[in-house]
Amino acid sequence: MIKTDILIIGAGPTGLFTVFEAGLLKLKCHLIDALAQPGGQCAEIYPKKPIYDIPGFPEVLAGDLVKNLMQQIEPFQPGFTLGERAETIEKLEDGSFVVTTNKGTQHHAPVVAIAGGLGSFEPRKPPIANLINFEDKGVSYIIKDPEAYRGKKVLIAGGGDSALDWTIYLADVAAELYLVHRRNEFRGALDSVERVSALAKVGKVEIITEAEVVDAHGEDNLTAVTVKHQEHGESHIDVDYFIPLFGLSPKLGPIANWGLEIEKNAIKVNNAYDYSTNIPGIYAIGDVNTYPGKLKLILSGFHEAAIMCQSAYQHIFPDKKYVMKYTTVGGVEGFDGTKKEAKKEVVKSIV
Image 1 (tube, rainbow, N blue to C red):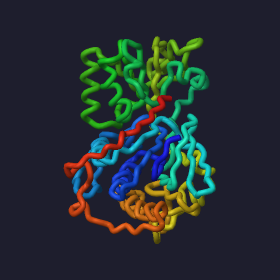
Image 2 (tube, one colour):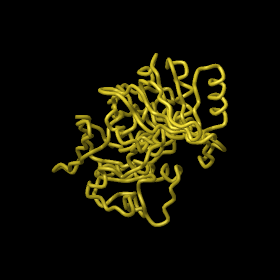
Image 3 (cartoon, rainbow, N blue to C red):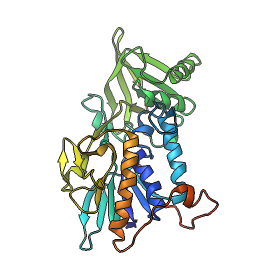
Image 4 (tube, rainbow, N blue to C red):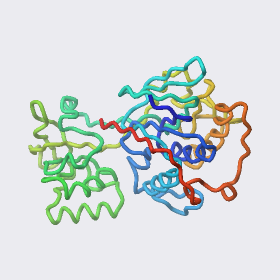
């Protein structure tokens, strides 16, 4: 059983910044996320997308924002349960909660902060009837361990940043590498498109455009796919791995069954006070919540996290009074020459 002060569901920007605000209050945090790495959409879907409305940054790439947030919270040594989805919640007699993931990992905390963005992410799958037969047997929707593809024949499908970024990365890993896209034009960053084109010219990757994968073949494991080209028809390609990278579809997921008040796939909160839900001890911050005048912006999530942590402190310590200090006065432990002795706790389950 993993125990913490605030259990954060979702390790996107809002969830990560919650660690910082809680850390200033000497509260320990642990984060659960279904993705294999922190950062939510910013890390998984558009790491190279520029963001323009983060205070103090005229422009910052989404991936760099995540890196900065991870550096900012490092002194507070949060724990992570990655690659697992928060599945069930149980309220104990003392008012605290036990949250269990789909892999059976249990977490105990007096406060739960749901910062799941638009919800849990499910991969968008291509409409191939027998594809489910090869999932985890050659078909993957998210790359968790690039070394698994070393010396293998790999086909990536997609035209966005994720498909391009992984094509660039796996060019020096895979024995044979294919990139299949339905259109001639790619949606990713221009720099990535140019790098993939350069890799194609030197034979590191074969680009097949105006085409899509329409069938998968094999017995126990994937051995080949059928690619249908708009002009040249169907072709058979021997592969060890097929990786469709068509993005992730957000869903509220199991949290919708936790007894929370839901409105249009979002969690209703009390924005006049502390972003608390209808269940005492459970808060919802960031894009996952809704209230009159709600703005789905990262900076709004940062604000909500700061307010929520103040309320969470009073919920955990009702008899204590916390006097807020500016970081310019109180400093931040770990950045001001001090060190924490607590050991960083990281739990990863690769699915």
